[in-house]
Image (cartoon, rainbow, N blue to C red; front, side):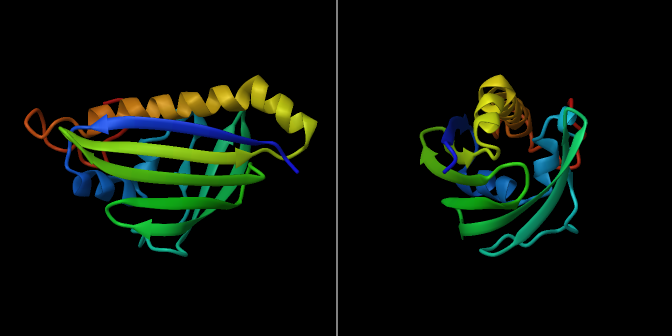
Length: 167
């Protein structure tokens, strides 16, 4: 059995939970939350209705190697949480829980990703060599983008979702 890893992140967003949840539940926003170096693209026609069982197809590149990724929305419980799981893609296992908690001053967004890599010892070496660092880089970028896209209500309006990266 493959070794399992976990990535946990949290971020305070100074917006009401229903606004934050709606932003995350719009699959089109995935592209603007993903670093350009991944060349991430949603293949499933938009808009995507998010509900348990929804499947979403993507392409991305890592080190100039193209990957097809298919996920399924496993749970969808607005405005509290949803989970997505990989059906096919670069990981042996991928389970991503998104939680949204009301907090003083806004919404606390919690992410917990449990994942495993294929290829046995080669997967373990890949984890320590670049997977862990790359995932942290992706989530760091996402945090920066969320800060820019969802500022406090009194500072600026919500940035349109079609705003290109690099505001």
